[in-house]
Length: 349
Ligand code: HPA
Ligand code: ZN
Image: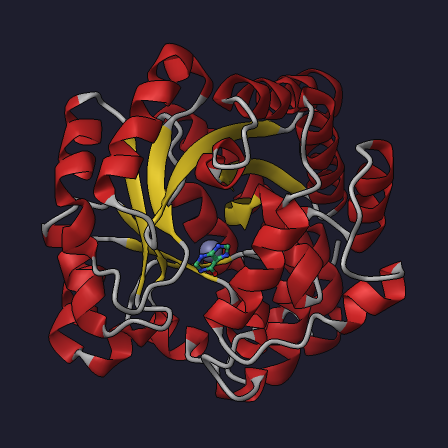
């Protein structure tokens, strides 16, 4: 496989066609304005915006919190199991079109249970879509329950209790929402309990928060994967540790620009992370809000960063499989398929 022989002009098509996994997608962040309006109408909910265009025009964020305010408001239209099913089914079809073959999907149950929507309604709708994707799209998918870090740890424990009867419908837990002022240690006990229960553990860290939050997510929460993590480059020791321990970062370039973590894509550090040997991946985070699904994240990032070529395309797809929570045998099958795809590309196929 001679990746250097692949012309740069073919890169965009390769990025779109290559098989890949998505590991950082908030399902509520896939809710398109059209779907928000349709659900609001059928559920008899009055929206603060007069039209789809007006709602989309409000997607001008200055930081994480300014996004979260609109994101939680948008999720307020979700009421029935059918709503949760339809949201996830739409995303899964979109992922299939991007040649995603596996996804690990975050959901925020507290956003819904706080509004009186039963936990069962949320997870049964999402899980039905995951099952249907496996059967009808040949797409592998699983669910990860995220605790909202702006709420208390007691609230997270209560959510875990509600979730345990549905233990077979999700594979792990994560930590999202406003990072500043809500450090990992706030959730050390509930993550400890989840670990005892055999759940897989991930956490958002080092998006807006400092590099120290990444270290604490590893040491205090025992997170197996870090969501975002881009601020690790502020601490060279941490970068060396991430590389040595093969700890994956689920990086979301379009999100980072929309939320002003980087001023523009041309300043993004994904190339430097890969060059440092960090197991970085590319993901969409909240695609309906940040201007693109997974393939747009790949193509826009490669357009903006000249240091990214066919070698990095291969590496990012390979990393997405390596960092996933599937059995090693499954990873090996998917990586063999990826190798065959790139061998074909480099042979001029
Ligand atoms: N960061 C934190 N919380 C979130 C995000 C994010 O990027 N997206 C949805 N919830
Ligand atoms: Zn996220």
